[in-house]
Amino acid sequence: MGKYWNEKIECMEREEMLALQSQRLVKQVRHVWDNVPYYRKKMEEKGVTPQDIKGVEDLYKLPFLSKADLRDAYPYGLLAKPLSDCVRIHSTSGTTGKRVVAFYTQNDVDMWEDCVARAITAAGGTKDDVCQVAYGYGLFTGGAGLHGGSHKVGCLTLPMSSGNTERQIQFMQDLGATILCCTPSYAAYIGETVKKMGLTPDDLKLKAGIFGAEPWTEEMRQQIQASLGIKAYDIYGLTESSGPGVAFECQCQHGMHINEDNFIAEIIDPETGEVLPDGEKGELVFTSITKEAFPLLRYRTRDICVLTRGKCECGRTLVRMAKPMGRSDDMLIIRGVNVFPSQIESVLLKMHNVSPNYQIVVGRENNTDTFEVRVEITEEMFNDTIRSIEELEKKISQEMLSVLGIKAKIRLVEPNSIPRSEGKAVRVIDNRKLLD
Ligand code: DLL
Image (cartoon, rainbow, N blue to C red; front, side, top):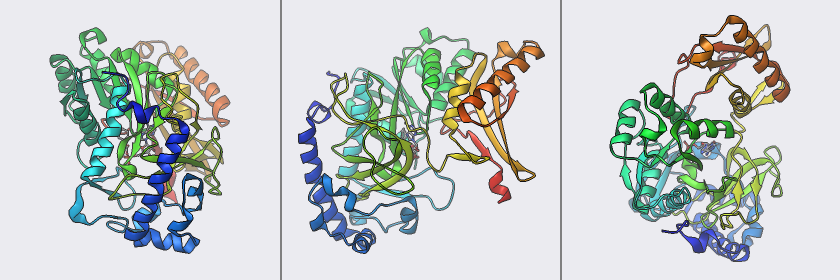
């Protein structure tokens, strides 16, 4: 088995890819215009018709879609196929407002699973692997997405879902799982539990992990790799665009390759909506050019990242996106300074004697924001002197100030005192929202 799932597409020359995207885009715009009155109205308001879209170069003429549109049109307003042609529904894990529901035809499911198969193959997966899927199953796309891709590759699939961590590890050992798929925070927890159970990575057959659904840093990657004895790969996606597999990491781990034959990516200035050149940081926007049931055009993801072109050493020509540094709506504004949880994680994981378990607590006192970072220390540190604990607090506080530009109160807490997550981690508690 080669290192590509679909070499022709994954290594396609730029000109050819642009021609393919253009042809698919023209067809998709017509499909949406004919079948989605909600978006057609948006196009009419902007004075655009399908005739104006002759290729990728005309993409900028189309109106954006946002999460607010999806909520407005809930549940069927953006459906582009009769419900009788749809075979599946998934939904976002968001906790505020109405959930977003996405619909899939059988062709949509096939395309999605094909994208995930590319990710598994890029992580070294073949039909000889045992793939343990520990993302949640259900409305969340993680379980179903990795499950479908794993089948497609022909791996022996272990549909564990998340939770019951000791049993998870027991199965991993007994059935010789070689690939683990879950959120990075859950992978870190599994790593911790392996150690607690008196096992080492040598007791497991794992070789790779495919982790995504939430931001995670390079430092976190190193920790997970060491605790499980694997190479850890990033995977990106969102319910609105089908699920995991919109982009995936290859062996080179220099950004995630976007499946451009199905999704056209743009980076825009989140304030003005202006399209930014490759290499500039901004909000990621996706246009799905092959989806039938729920084909979003110029969907604003709120994810902040950077695109890089140029051939990767793996041979793929697909554009790469950097690890998203957070969502524009996850960005905290503390005392007027923009703070991303990923910056805090990066500082903490560079320190010795702290674990990757932390929580950011923001509040307000006397009209001023309070900003506290709780972080667990390791067992070894816990048994150390108060003086050395105070020194560590001071060191973290200084480093945080130099990276973020504002002072955080660092509170070192006992090992295992911060709740663990089996899905997406809850890193931020913003008590200011209750006060507003
Ligand atoms: O999280 C889909 C998914 C499942 C991706 C499993 C990867 C693995 P949603 O619940 O709709 O879908 O959340 C989508 O999660 O807009 C990003 O903000 C964030 N996200 C997803 N993957 C990554 C990643 C799934 N690799 C939202 N790095 C997206 C950082 C990610 N953030």
